[in-house]
Length: 74
Image (cartoon, rainbow, N blue to C red; front, top):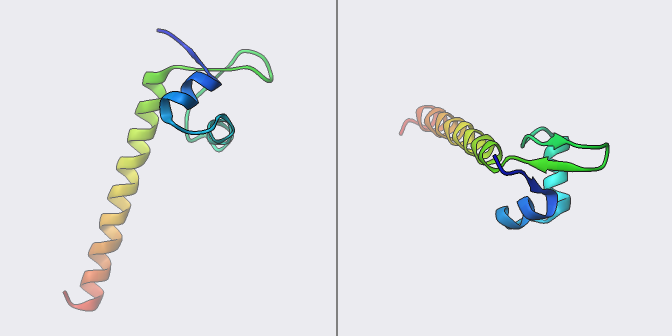
């Protein structure tokens, strides 16, 4: 397992390092805390976390759409 720095993981995700740190605080992605200020990331765990979150979001959106269609008579 190769761990990435905050900057490396952010670059791979094409987001800013500050966004990645915010996601860690909000528990959107997992991180390994080396020291209070130093984080490392397992890319496989990060991608799995994001994919699971995306899948849950899509399921919730589908349920909302289905409920809207039933309520509107479609």
